[in-house]
Length: 166
Image (cartoon, rainbow, N blue to C red):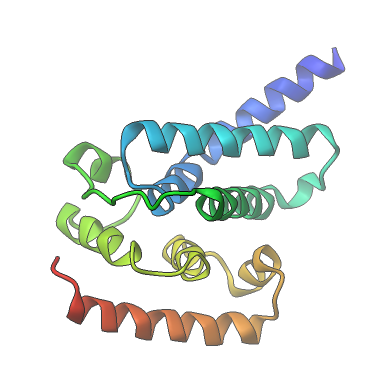
């Protein structure tokens, strides 16, 4: 019965964190449905591997973020061919849990396509209002380093917004 309880607990964690997982997938793919599904499945597999190996279950959301972001970055690094980016369609925008207009969300993702994987990670955490200390834990850096990188990421986004056709 212990195994069944693990599966039920894991399934509940995935359901509770679906929004996080979906947003990470949008940030790190070309936003084509198959690519989103592939990355989502890879992340769930990595989460299951960690779950069955006995993680600290007191900080679940931090762990979910860490695994999801690292899996997405690893997948992006190992992609041998650059994948062309596509704009978000209306259905994808509506699935996001952002308090913004669909066009704004779409524009943000277009700009994010020009960020480095580290900047995308920071942007995702920042948009989800993850606490600074949790960002530091997820990224494995100090809170001061997180603050500095967020500032640089914001500056980079401002520069991109002036250069990219939205």
